[in-house]
Length: 435
Image (cartoon, rainbow, N blue to C red; front, side, top):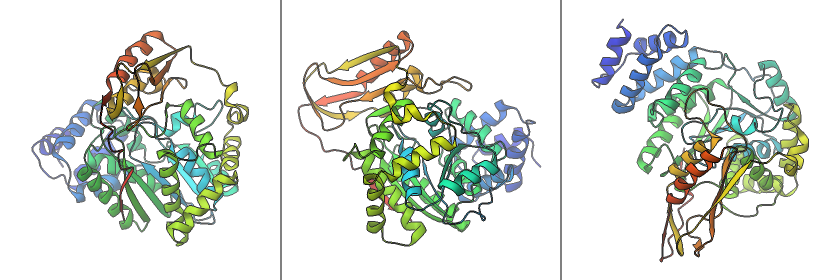
């Protein structure tokens, strides 16, 4: 068996790690016997040298072996989940999960916190006062059985290796590695006990995958791993060259999600992508056509069934229902600042990564492990690609509870916009389906 030093050196030089070597690193790091600085070095080596399909499969398996797999065989019905590779303003899970549950699918969703410039579903849910995301397995299953949807953070015994590696990747600039993303996502999803999985792989300047070819490679790799474990899996490549929806942050993304669930948002990229992914989930589970499944999802919005299911989940997980039913009762951020257009024209591009990092600076994300997230910090995006603007029009609004944070982020948001006199084509939202 090679030492950690030799394993790092082997991968640094482009070697292929054996399953025993991968097992050793994962096991020893999870147990606290391998220091973070050595694992950080290995992560960076993997980032630059990559991993073969076999190495990625071995890494996924080794990570799963550090914890337990949830047994949902005693929960009737098809169990399905959805996962996004991370984007700016991506609050789809908050909308999709209750919609799918309202249509009869059991949705056991284990989600993560913010990673790099992207937001995390758990941080968003925890912006609801009292909402519990740490659930014992028995309670987790009980909520799923009773109302059909439960959204929780990773328990201590569900892939503990990923929880430690996830935090380390976030602060060592090694997030965008295809094998690391693939093993992280699939180790969690395969441990959940689901029957079907829909993957939303973001591509663009605000995604971890900047190029379509890389996004396709990641999607294909995850679909292969899922199929190898006998799961029904489909992946979509979707655009992240601008924020999804209008809100970025934690509580403000919850509020935007509620507007969609209440049927107050009749068009736009957020609604389009949510209904597409939710319909795919229903189709995988039921075997019905995609069009029929999409009609059911739309009915769940129009009838209020999805919104009511979200309220059921909030109650079951002890969230404060009064602020969900009436967001005006929620506290407000201390500072806000409007970013205005300095020239006229059309919005042609947005540096979505820069916008995402601006939200982190405002307090909506973490710059280092242990940072506290401000649920009120965030950005409202008023102008997106293709929109016409005049001098003085408000492009976006930044929110924070610290004035210095607000003013620092404002400069980044302003510089993220590019305008021209020619009207551009709007980005293609859904680029490809991979199954």
